Image 1 (cartoon, one colour):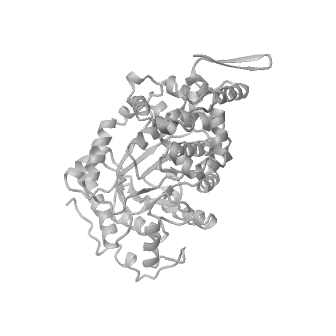
Image 2 (cartoon, helix red, strand yellow):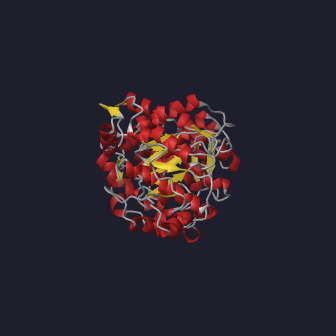
Image 3 (tube, rainbow, N blue to C red):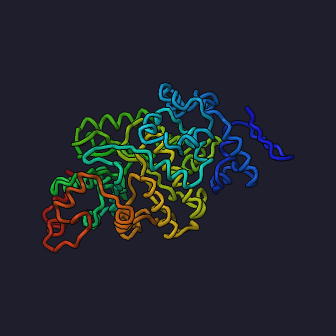
Length: 466
């Protein structure tokens, strides 16, 4: 079905809903690379005006990727909550924006309609919203999850402690873990990107982090970010696995490029839940996404990259994860060219995920060949924290020496918590006080005799694959 918008003497024609969504998207390099972006600012504005008049019901009738050929589309359609949709079914995209910004759409109302919001609906309304609109609505969305602590409550900002090392040296990783804990980081997860997929090496990392958590009774969870099939293997070998990680995308073909399917993710979730390692909840999955992943796999089918990204959140939502985050600037300037594009994408992703009921964090990051710098990241992390971000990354110096990209540091989380009066997860906050790492909510210097420091290389069991 074609869509038309008349502006004076000019008539703009969009061949179908997929084309209309792409043309309405704020300018970004990935859509130009894919050949789906608007050819001018005037065409982009015309597309947005036209999109605002599209009924939300249309997104259930005109599918962007065929039901018969894509399991993500089937998931979106088959899991749609028609009863919850009744509250917003009469709205157009423009009406939906106005409703979201109104006082009627409080946290309770947004939670009610979340199962009814398809990725395409979320992407569509985001395209006609200003940055401050995205921030305001996301701030009202509350998505609370739990494993050993409770993530996502109002007034809280959690941190993934990311102690990567280029050779998986256990003492180097241990030093980074201690560094992060002493800055109050780690309540979201202690998550390591391993340098190798060797099963014995992965087992060693699992036992290392489990020793930290067990020895110091830390109310947090661990995750080794290897492929999901490796994680199933180590579970079968008896490794102490808390969270199962996987990168996911918004189309079946892109997910096949990651070596995964929905059935495989279900198998991994069942395996992790069977261990019953959570104490306050059983949200055992951790997903990462990023605009451009489908296009880079030649699996976007003409859909703009932001809508593809929102479709990845349908995959995440289905598995009730503890954590999901968009790695917003990691893929590179071919997809998000500069600081402005990265900022807009981060706000869109956070908004769309939270609107759909997904616990959204963000790896506020950039590669060294992008037209961006740390000031851009400071701006984005502050905007996202204002918008109710669930968690962000904490890495020594904000410089990942294994993955070779720039992200956020332990210091950044301290700044945001102080600036915006935010706290860690409640159970973790209590632990920090008991360990005398914080006093009345503020990080304090610790003496050399502090248990974390006196144990850092000696009494912890640094296993060799057992």
